[in-house]
Amino acid sequence: MRSASTVSAIVVLGLSAMAGFGIRANASSPPSGPAAHAFRDCTQAQLLANGRPIMIPMRDGIAIGISLAQHKFKAGEPIELHIWIDNRSDAPTGVFTCMDLERFRASGIAIFAQDGHRVLSQDEEKARKECSANPQGAIQWGLSACARNILLKIPAHTCVTQNNYDFESDLTSRYRLPPGKYAIRLHAGWQRGINLCAQELGEPSPSRRADLIFTVANP
Image 1 (cartoon, rainbow, N blue to C red):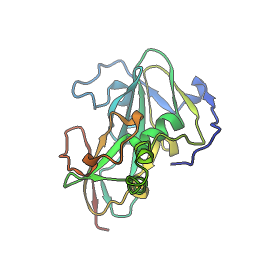
Image 2: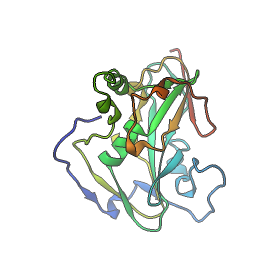
Image 3: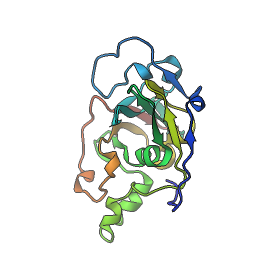
Image 4: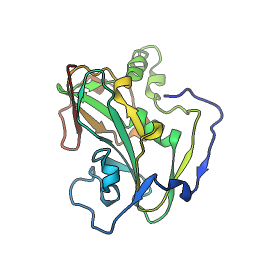
C-alpha cells in the first residue's frame, strides 16, 4: 500500500472519461443464483476476458468484486487479480482510488490454503507481529490514507474493470504462495478494516461455494 499523506489529490473524472472504461448493461434479465455472482452489468464479453467475478454489496447500489482471467499458475508467475465495480443503481456514482479501491485491495479479500488456514499478505504478516506491542495499530491496519485519491465517476448500470494499478492486484508480489490450491474469499466488513490480532485468523476455514479458486504448480 502507498504511504500515508496529509494531502490527497482529488480529481473528478467526467462521464466522458469513462468511454472504453466500462460497458453498459444489456436488456436481458440478471441470472439467478447467489448474490456473490455478477449480474447483467458485468456479463459483457469484453469484461469477461478478465474472468467471471464474484461480488458483494458495497454501498448505495454499488457492488465490488474480483476475478481471475485464469485459475492455474506456476510458482513465481504473476497472479493478476482483477477488481470490479458494478453500479447497479439508476444514477451515476463515484468511487475513490484510495478510500475505496486501495482499501478493498488491502482488506477486502482473504486467501485460504487448501488446509483452510488463512494466508496473510506480507504486509499483514508484519502488522500481526506487532500485536503484542501495539495491538491497536494492527487492528486499524488497512484504514490509513494514501497519497493518491482520485474520484472515478461511474454511470448508472455500468460495470467497470481495467488492466491498470487501480483495478489489479498482483497476488504473487503481495503473498507467499507456494505450490498448492487456494481459495479467495470476499470480506464483507472490509470497510471497517481487519483485526489482525484476532485469534480466529489462525483457525482453519473450509472452502465455500462462492470462493474464487486457483492453483499454483511447480515451475
